[in-house]
Length: 414
Ligand SMILES: Cc1ncc(COP(=O)(O)O)c(C=O)c1O
View 1 (cartoon, rainbow, N blue to C red):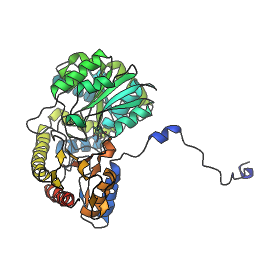
View 2: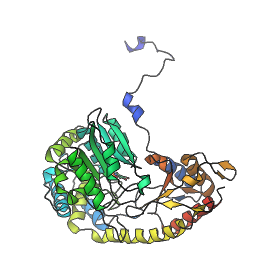
View 3: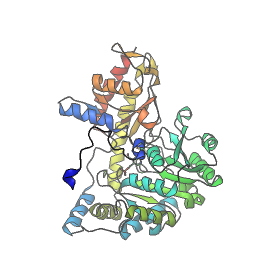
View 4: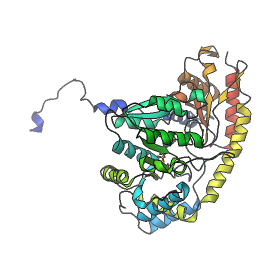
């Protein structure tokens, strides 16, 4: 009888699963949370910490979503998405890659994050190693670890945040199962050039590795630069590559959760089985809306977004180039794509600001927030304790105001 069970008293709480120790909140979210708290308290914080566009999505998408709601599109869809959506994505990819993709080689997911998680779960075994260029997007290593595998980092800082194929080759061991490539890159904004992409693809073929190719920012490219899809550059790598993409960044749809994975049909089938037991299909309304966006092309929207980002970047770089710490300029990764600026702040570490020592990048970012009222993300969130990430996808006047504040902050470091 329940009433007879005595309380066990003040014993230690029952333990959670061991894997929870591997999962900490993304380091990108802390500054955002503090910035929002300050904002709510009435402080004018310039928030460079966001990871999404500041524009509304297109009318085409909004109208299609409303039509889907009115059309009672409320029920489950197939696990990996509606066939017309998979077919359209496959057609688009076939064109971009110059090699045919079928709908069976495409699975629609709740954002790129789920596509990446699916990939980790269906490709990796405990004990496998996965090569990840560093700095990296914060979720890659965590997902690899959840799958029981081990991330192996290759530092790109000494090569201007670009891929050095020889360094990657040196990191390959008999346990290496996969390599994760993200271009345009978060956090650096660098777009890997064609030679490097081909070099990685050939290395993967030589060493029989999977390639997880995250091109979520493929549509967000600054003038004079071009994004290279790894399958387009090296079609023989198609049967070992999972291309991951999403509509979050290109269509200002982060909250709607539509992304996809494209790869060999047996990989996509395994993802279907996994997704069938985890989330099932991504949001049906969002799927119908994205079908319409693909049908209508949507180029105007993306072109407009890129135009705005170009202007903001010009404005931002003019100020960044005038920043200095004790007379030395602040370095910045080549801002070629996505909407991030990645500043090299190593010259501030160990120095003082307002009499306070700056021991590390986390403390630097907290001080920038408390003193300059500017939120940026510490590079430590991306495995780089010498950088900070700023998103320039914010209002024009905030870009100028925030960077001027930052310039004054650095000028006061001694
Ligand atoms: C490199 C990279 N991959 C994947 C994602 C996840 O995108 P989604 O919102 O589509 O899940 C992000 C989001 O910031 C990202 O920066």
